[in-house]
Amino acid sequence: MQTETSYQRLRGNGWPWLAYLIFVPFPWLWAKPDATTIFVAAVAVGLFLPLYLASIRVPDRAIIPIALAMLALGIAVAGLPLGWTTFCIYAGVTVARLRSRRHAGIGIAAIAVATAVTGLAWHQPILWFAPGVLFVVMSGVATMSSFAFYERTQALLASQEEVRRLAGTAERERITRDLHDVVGRTLTLVALKADLAGKLIDLDTGQAKAELAAIAEAARSGLAEVRAALAGQMGGTLAHETSASLAALETAGIEPIVTGDPGAVPADAGAVLAMTLREAVTNVIRHAGARRCAIGFEAGPGDARLVVEDDGVGLSFREGNGLRGMRQRLVAAGGRLELQALQPGTRLEASVPA
Image (tube, rainbow, N blue to C red; front, side, top):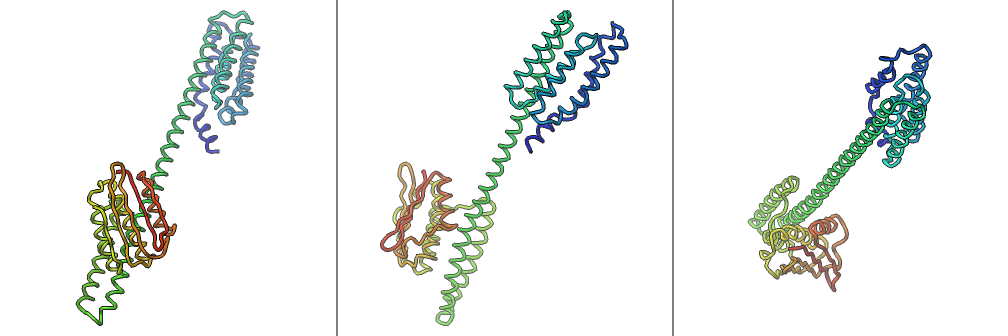
């Protein structure tokens, strides 16, 4: 329905093009018409007008019959001193509106041939009908070209709209992933420190105050990261995220073990692995029930790898928003994510091109 409406809009208002009907009585400038000729011309124009106005609105299947009717009008009055080829030209323009370029081209050629044959059959001078044949071809081809240009323009606009839609979807998915990682880490850390402060408040007031201050700092830091995520500026260095992950693991009472140098990982790969590390460590703290967590880095000649292993509940990384976001982020960067159940624990390996 939308395509049909677009074609009708392209055909537009046909009234201005009726001005070319002035060429029907053009021969009367040098040959005075009789009453019969005037009557036939009036009848022909009267029959032509509803056909022409209908051709602007009808679907493809009705175009050929209308074009044939216009051609028939021209042929019918060809023996009179009238500009009969005018009707043939309108027929050529009408058939050129067919969406099938092949059918439109065949239709234009057939109308041009029929016009030429009619002129020859009436033994008219070539200069009398040849311009009409020429204009059938020229006007038809011009109409075909305008419709083809319109189709290409519409296709381009549709592809641009699709690109905008996909970009919007990708941006929403990015914000969802980043906010999930930021909020998950921040709230987990706040909960852990709040529990610790509650235990220390009667035992060590000074340490409890320090934990409360750390909660406030974690909240402020989380708020800043949320703002950065919404602005599309998320992604710190891998070394910074490693330090934050170690601190979070220690707060949760999980022994962290680090192998490899996060600083050796190239910055572009490190930014992706940093977000992966954040979510992986958050999952270990929240779900694994682990006592130890090993984090390993490796920067090879072609890719960079991150390995996170824990000794907690096997396959604690369930396919939720966090794991899904992790996988999407890595795949978008040309990397991959692998999970393996250990006895006990879980091994997560992420790799991206370096």
